[in-house]
Length: 266
Ligand code: ADP
Ligand code: MG
Image (cartoon, rainbow, N blue to C red; front, side, top):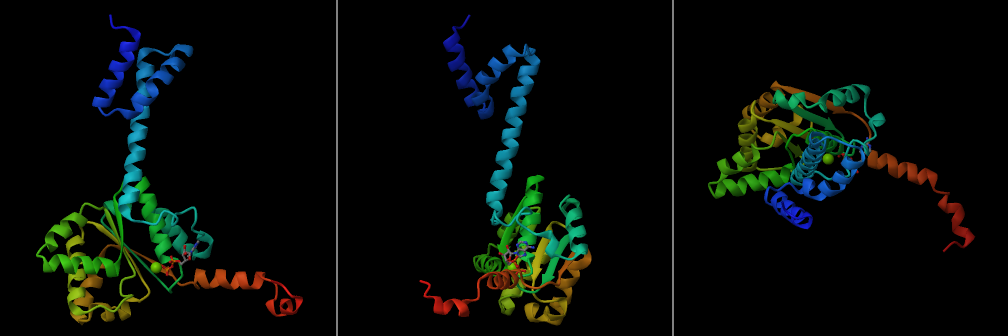
């Protein structure tokens, strides 16, 4: 029979070797509880196994949130749904269940600058990660630069493969920066590569009618739009800028500065 202190150190060693960190941290404390509550051996083991699973699930989500490059503060809790049209609220409610990802559908968010497109897609992205999906956020301009560099180094297919591990790719601000033909070609290659293979979420200030500015060539523009919209949900955020509105509200809440000028404030 092994001595009591040997049991603890052996158990610690085995659990460490088996990478069961939550079990290692909790087994002693839960054993005390199990004795008090007269739990069976099986119930105690169940409790420990559950802790390990919860721990692993949480660290996986934490890891995927970090990998996604989504800004943490752009989540559903900080997004005021009352600012967006009712139809968008309904669309968002059904999108966060994630079935659009299974169907490889795309989400396209249109609206003026400041209407909340980026924040909303990031928030949806975070919800999807919490449901176990892999998401990657990138500004369009950065993505295009990365693709171009890869193409120059004959590594385009490697990068496309790397991106294909993500269930959802968020491309922020397509068409915001004027890009040349070679830049648009690589972007088109990516869209074609993911077509019906993985979801894309895009934000844009430009309506489709102006997408020729992005893809330059009318045929390429039509082909890009066609692939994106074939299986897609369009979120129309035709609302005023949140930034502008909060700035205006702040101004109206501040006391009239002209009447303060003569009061000798510091
Ligand atoms: P867009 O991508 O449409 O230009 P953003 O998503 O960047 O707009 O929003 C601009 C700023 O306003 C961000 O700081 C964002 O967090 C905030 N914002 C926009 N809409 C909302 C909203 N409905 N609730 C809370 N914050 C919002
Ligand atoms: Mg934006």
